[in-house]
Length: 380
Image (cartoon, rainbow, N blue to C red; front, side, top):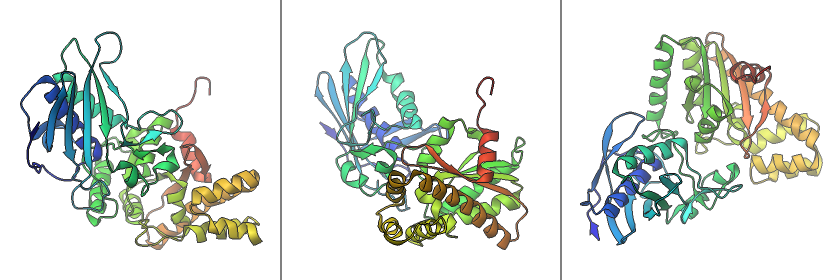
């Protein structure tokens, strides 16, 4: 085994980057190459090759090797800090089939429905770009990532709400961590927004996406990638800046358990600052006629998702009305928030999705924008 003290590269990288670094080190060991404590990775977003530190690599057998990296997400709050990432690389028999297969090891999140490793398109692309040049022409490769602490840490995430079980999802759409609760993240998002507003192709439209799951889901549904901008917890200032910068139509796209805070007038959504989701949901349900023990049960549910799922099972029509009222209220409270800040008129719609990654509610403006921006089927 060849090992070295962890080489500190530029901090602030997402889990897919450390996965790719450990995988590349494992592949080098499998080839019999000298150990490189700094792996030169092409990061794609932003483009360019960066040195990413790995801790160890070992050849375990003639056809099997292991690489190890330690996550460094930078200065913000991030549960992947210090997370150990192991990647086992194994030669597969030559023959037909993809040159690269991936199998979820312990602590890696899998999709509940299929059992496949939950891997973002960016994570897979990062592996392909950085490993393919090292592959012999007559070989195929199996990668088996292992996150020893992944199963425990996943309990602190909303992975299960989106159908990801048994560990952490290997998701991420870019190399650098965006710490949503960090004030620096607000400045980063505002800088990205300014670039969009100054672009020659800017036509006054924008989609603010709350969370990584939303950013992954939106293009899958067909929403234009060029309109998507991920926003962290600093939703209010970004909305104001968008209106002041000339955005005329804006769609809020996010998970119902997150966007519900806006219905309560909470425009900084980090839970350390404010919550109130149960109270907002209960108030809206009461306006829809729910009362007594059923209303108390809704308030006492462990999550918004669970509350709405229980209501859906008991009274689907009421659950549908409640979701609709939630989306309408989000649009109304957002309009009021912008009016208080004296911004230029901006039409804001809301579209919510549930843990099954299905659109479950849309406000009046949200429905209009969704119809305008989703591709039409042939003959539609």
